[in-house]
Image (cartoon, rainbow, N blue to C red):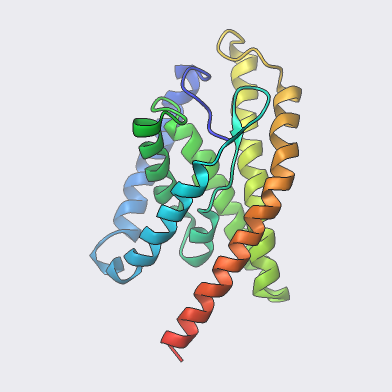
Length: 209
């Protein structure tokens, strides 16, 4: 699902950085300061898991890939901004040391996979948890994958409309190539979110009876 360097022009990447930068600062100050020290081990561990599962990328037509996310769970447990900062860190490390994604497109990838997907997951969970937290967690994980894939496809489609020399693949092709795998990958994302959320809930109950 990573958009590689060179697929988007500065017309899109610069505004994406302008939108992401204040959110990075706000999220870091609000959720990663001294007052949140107790939460750091869990956040750090789940971010590490997200990093590992995102390195398993399956190439798809259009030059991008599909993979699990892992960070929507952070949105459910804490806040979408926590997921955004964590995903941005994952993407930054992958871009700098593993050649996945890229520095110029980091903000676009982070907004798509770290903010939009987890934010929708957070909202879906808040609505559906009345029917049961497990069902809510599964649907939240699944829908986060679809929203993230749609956001990536929309960015590529917009680039194709603005300047096909950067990305010549037509939007309908990209949309299909992104959403069809996401429908299946989303089921795995939902299962991971459900299992991890349930396990962490049990641990919390045992520690705070």
